[in-house]
Length: 119
Image (cartoon, rainbow, N blue to C red; front, side, top):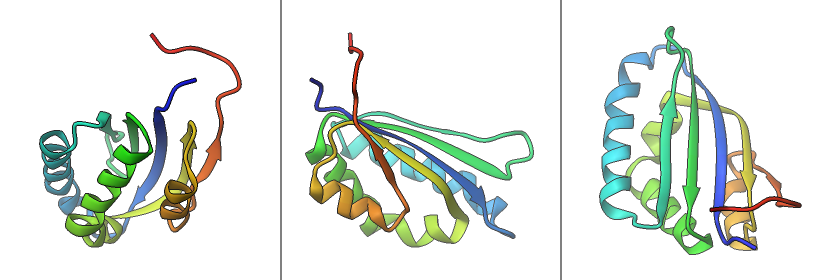
């Protein structure tokens, strides 16, 4: 069984925040890539009208998730929540109680792997 935790977070861009989104995302991606070796996959997607945003994230394990959430809280949470409204947040994998509690504020739902494999 894999220790990998991943999620899909779907959000709406808040009114009047469209110009703030790209600089914030660029800063977050650079910081995550530089400071978080346990972040395995970290990508943001938006449609042409830039009204919504989907984030795909994958972490090596629960500890890597908590490192990310610590950095996010310290550096980006205030601006992120001013720019986005989370609409759907699905977490996949063996999230422990600490990770589950940390993601509760974002409305996360959790699913456990029941079949499959990783290469």
